[in-house]
Amino acid sequence: KVCSGRELLLRLYSRVVLRLPGVFQFLSGSSVETNITSHIALTQDTPGDLKLVLKDCHNLLGGFRINLQKG
Image 1 (cartoon, rainbow, N blue to C red):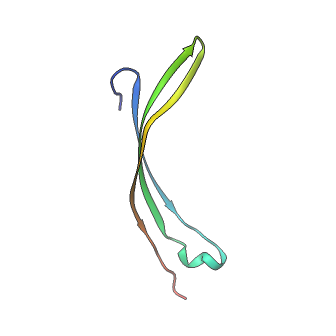
Image 2: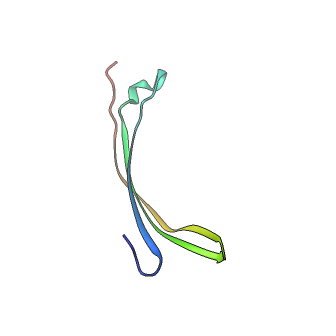
Image 3: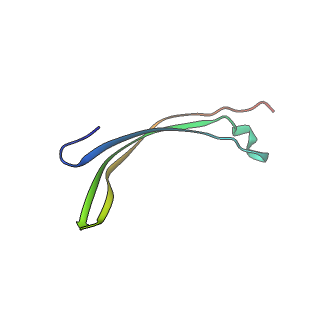
């Protein structure tokens, strides 16, 4: 989403699923979901020197699920 000026609003959704070997295998299949929102701007301090700036980065934990394996 393009905001006023030269800023972009970036929204990322991610889900991490655990696949663990050995002693922690009982947690395999558990997951964590998160939503990340950030304003991104492209700035130029000097000619030819472009910088990507992340502003107001917010993280919202969407939820988590724990699957315990039998045994």
